[in-house]
View (tube, rainbow, N blue to C red):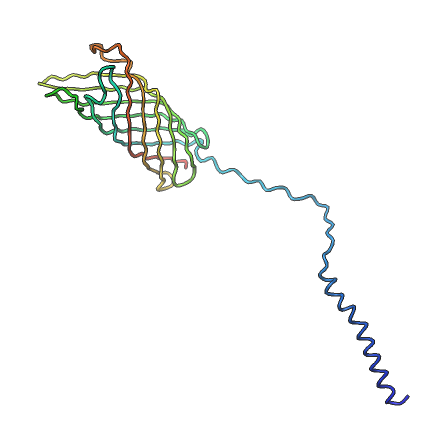
Length: 240
């Protein structure tokens, strides 16, 4: 075979080998991108349990002093308004609480009010008053662990109010006492540090003076009294 005949035969062999290799290489990308069968018989993972937020009040001792503007309302007896001989004054108080759940505390409440002279004080006389109260109640805290803690309180108590008057060198006291059937308060504490907070509050007390001075003309008459307070409360929670 001459050299001129060998060249066409060699060219034909190269073309044939190239055409056979192209289909195989064209299938490789498709084979590499085809999804593989997954035969995993293991059980699905268990759901993740989200832990509950910590109980931020249960077992905590709360100490909360208060200072407020105090307004007497209602009656001393059936014919005498409490705001007659007495005017508004300053009030001081203290709450001693213990947390019994995440949101609720039980507390002992102590209050002292120093009242001024009212418009109905007899002419030429000086009048003043002092009102003390103590009671039990429950508080509900809407938020725990945050820097601001809004709260509500409800309770019951016992109150004693003394009206003092003096004129022409003579003085006398008349004491009225009875049950505060309802104590309502609302406020919020802002914690400037982890354990110390303070914030505004207002409260309302409603009750009846069932024990009145024996010399009073209306000593046997029932009477409803009330007090409104607006002030500032501090709170100390060492376990917070």
